[in-house]
Amino acid sequence: YSTQSSSLRMTIIGAPGSGKGTQSTKLKRDYGVVPISTGQILREAAEEDTPFGKEIAKKLKTGDLISNDIMAEIIQKVLNNQNNWLLDGYPRNPEQAEHLDKVLKEKDIPLTVALYLDVPENILQERIQDRWVHPKSGRVYNSVFSPPKVKGIDDVTGEPLVKRSDDNDEKVFQNRIKTFKESTLPLLKYYEKQGILYTISSPTSDEGYIKIKKVLDQVVHKE
Ligand code: AP5
Image 1: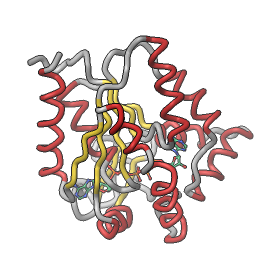
Image 2 (image 1 turned 180 degrees about the horizontal axis):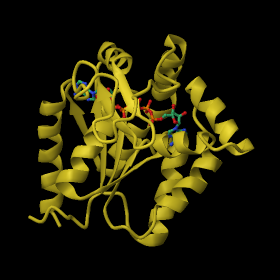
Image 3 (image 1 turned 30 degrees about the vertical axis):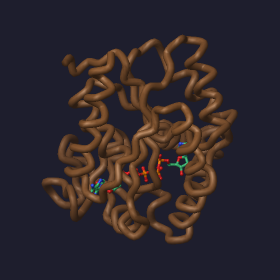
Image 4 (image 1 turned 135 degrees about the vertical axis):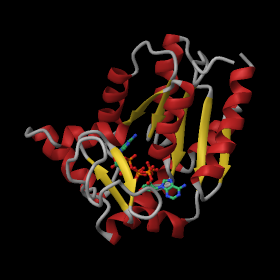
């Protein structure tokens, strides 16, 4: 089959640290899907020295969700006429899922895959503690699992790696987990009903990615 599938319009659902960003990078490489990370879009917005930027930065530091209205505007802007994309971090609650369905219905391009990365909570916390990022590019490292070539330095630019503003505080991490359970987990039922939910239960990336590929190859073959 062609790696450029016209039917892969996906969302990745998973708790903080479940590996959404990490798997997105591999899916881009192997299936040509364009990753759209709402977290990364918001972190970039938070860098702007404007009232809007400051408001977003404040919210991100707490681990709360940004309002559905702001997210609706952002998602409408980024979902252009690309045929195969991968949403990392959107939708995050049933209201956002309904909004997305509405937008896609207007374009006549329904979502074809909702991938849920199911990772145990103790593993999530370890991964977040060991995560280092290059903020400008969104490149993600892990000091244990996928360290940079030189400690504390981005492989590509040679610039320093940093901790994310929402990764350093135990309380904030717990709030992100709570928000995920309360607001985002209900999405599983939503997509199960639509018949497009695929759950990947695996704590390690290599195993997990093999399972993801099996799922996507099936979807691609159905075209
Ligand atoms: P977002 O950026 O989406 O953060 P998150 O959901 O908390 O997820 P993370 O980025 O923390 O983790 P990930 O699953 O991508 O894991 P990663 O691949 O990095 O959102 C941030 C904030 O933005 C939210 O809190 C919210 O405020 C706001 N927001 C975003 N979208 C929104 C929306 N739609 N509505 C409202 N607000 C929104 O992996 C984690 C670490 O583990 C890395 O170090 C990685 O190297 C390592 N790792 C990955 N896989 C493995 C593996 N298999 N084995 C070992 N280590 C691994």
